Image (cartoon, rainbow, N blue to C red; front, side, top):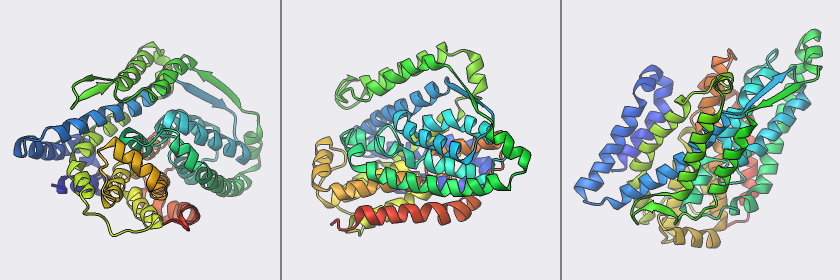
Amino acid sequence: MVLPFVALLLCIALFPIFAAHHWERHYAKIAVGLGAITASYYMIGLSATVPVLHALEEYISFMAMIGSLYVISGGININVRGGATPLVNVGFLLIGAILANIIGTTGASMLMIRPWIRMNKVRITGFHVVFFIFIVSNAGGCLTPIGDPPLFLGFLRGVPFWWVLEHAWSAWLLVVGALLSIFFILDVRNFRRAPAPVRELEKAAEHWTFRGLGNLLPLGAVLAAVFLPHEWKIGTHDFGITVSALVMLTAAVFSYFTTPKHLHQANDFNFHPVAEVGWLFIGIFITMIPALQLLGSGETLQLRTPSGYYFACGTLSAFLDNAPTYLTFLAAKMGAEGLDVMSAADVRQFVVLHEPFLIAISLSAVFFGAGSYIGNGPNFMVKSICEKAGVATPSFLVYVWRYALPFLLPVIAVAGWILTRGSH
């Protein structure tokens, strides 16, 4: 029964490459269909509804977080007039890396990619798109559970909210700092090759305008809702909607209907990206039930060290979605220790007793999620927006071969070696 989970991950990885048109038309049917196979096995074949209900409850909380941040950020418009020097670009990406921890990598990416395109419009190239994905859509969001979907799944399972910031800040400084330094060197070369009139235009002072700042109120409500106890929910013990999720959804609805239409139009806002994430993840959350149970039963991966988990989890996170990959490796290690990833008490015990392994799994899922367009949800969203804006965006293979392997991989490999050496 793990096969539907494997099949769905392979579909996510391969169909956009080899059958993109077919995938765009039928991805929802494929995800729901594979999820229905697993759900039927549990609910009809085993008469076990609780695992399915728990997965649906977790899915609702997950989508409430991702969806509300996407909708609210879509109502905030940042407009930039003028160009940008390499130093200004570095500052912009640094702000995006910080903001990713507050409104999530999805929210920060959707909020900042259009101004990024505008401020570099006269000389934007593929590396501008790729390093935006590296820094804003992925690595920057490793400081809080809000930052990246894998970390939020860990938070839902019982990892304390501030644990991530306490243990990931040095990794954040190392990886984000290294990527910004590499980008600065590349951007200086790009800037110097530009014609003199273009360089003068880029040096002109930027004029920034911010509209839709009323959406900071619902955004604050979403951030406050994260801290509400998960035990507060409407429903039964086996299935219910948390008060936190209800607050987030209410904030998103309020934002959408109070935001003037011209702001949504200025941001080219639509529900397609978040709908795609929603359809795919309903399939992922259901089909991964038997995989998590199998890994949690003691049938674990043959890995013994934090560094082993870092590179194994990271490799799969680059080419499969990093959220379920994170949860799969967490379940594997907890199962090896006789702990159950479905139990919040066991997760909290794991946090205390096996901290180096949790650090390795958490950081690898976030950092390696930038390894390809399919490693993390915002990656494809950014690619789609850039292509629509007429930017020459690298293809899947060019992204991996020309940028991820020579620039990203050495940085996160060195970071992994530094962070896991001496750990047992």
